[in-house]
Length: 266
Length: 370
Image (cartoon, each protein chain N blue to C red):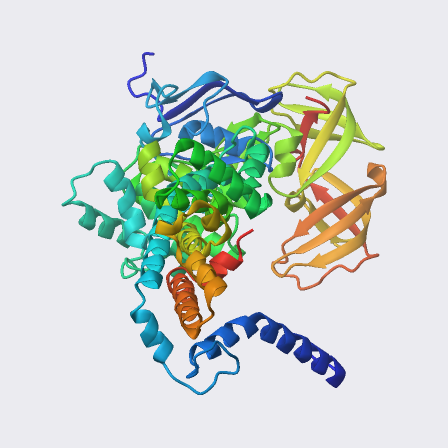
């Protein structure tokens, strides 16, 4: 493509601006975590790993991190079967009220998180299940389910509609067809969805804030609580670990199914 | 039934209705064991619906389909002994070539010890030995076709169904695969039903051809008979390049019919299936390659009809010329003529005066409306 120099300059300025704006928070927290000083600061005051060493000794942060991982695992365990079945059904079969159902399933997404958070808090309070970790896992699954459904249904929609008929003509009954053909064929979507759900649940702050009590804080809530007391660079270090976990999930995703599967999602 | 051996497939007054739309109307036919039947028709003619009824993916609204003499109305698709090659092949993308071919054997509970040998045997049959462990997307279009054929045949089905699997291929590969289908079908002797809109394919591969239009079977015959004796103008036009002439019937006998076209009376043949009466409007059909053409000075011997005309257009297609010739004596009709240039290298130019002619037996006469 032939561009005039002015076009090239504008194009690159916009691109660089976007990249800087998007990565600035990450870079700042990354830099701040390596500070040698005792207050959180950017640019960092010298370089050291002492705050990473420090978080190794902080049981509160570690336990909060562990709780977040447990919540994320519960979320994945709940959302993968539900979201997979819903995604396949919505894209492959003539479901009655499919349109309405789709809107309903996307609803958690359109309600502000604070709204669904309060709703879930009231509901769980009524059921007397506040104070355990698993309701938080279920809550994050409910709120983020649209992502799971999207991932699976985009994978299912691109399948040849004759695939299941082909399985039948090979002698497979309905269940055999589902487990041997349909499910494996949408596996890329399921993996994508599962990793997304894991990350989203791991990072979930607002809803967790409303559903946890002092004994079971998750990591984002723990960090938030600490910030309100005193801001020390160990929070930057733990944030970096947090980011690294999410990035790792993205890398795994790319390795297994390729990011384009997710980016193609409608 | 008193037959010693029932037909491999019979359809008896099969109808299929979707809402108010009749996709298949009163279809009846028989297919003998080991034969290759092609159902030919334009898109929307009901041919694929008919195939899916036979496969068991749809249940007829009325009528019966018999396979080896038994009604299959209550038999689910996965319980029928039918192999099928789909239009977009529908190979399982997460399996290798060999796993795709092994799948029907596993589903149909073949002895696990015999499966690898059988898979190898069928991959060899379709000339894909050495490609066992390739994933589907690592194979070329033609190789994928072959995997689909092997998967449909590996469990030795009573019946093989082909749902336009060649439609998406380029012409050269398509013609190669047509012959490949024919070879495999002959080698295994499996009864086959093929669906296509490609009239050439129908003539090349089949023992029996059914032409469908608007959900109705138009004709059911052997390829040569279908070509030489089409039963109505639709079939005449769908197979081959055909000229339509409108006329009025003047005289009819059991063997032939005479009709007035423009200023002239011409004699032709009729199938005798439908009653023709004097004075009724008729359609004459003559194939483009059955009309002879020569420059005005040359003479043509042995023809029954002979007219003068002017070349309007001349198209060179390599092995043949296609001419459009205006014939004043036929009321100014323009006829398409295919001329295979055997010895004479001369091509006729637009504007040239020519004479054209044909034999009476090549002019088909049909009632104007069915």
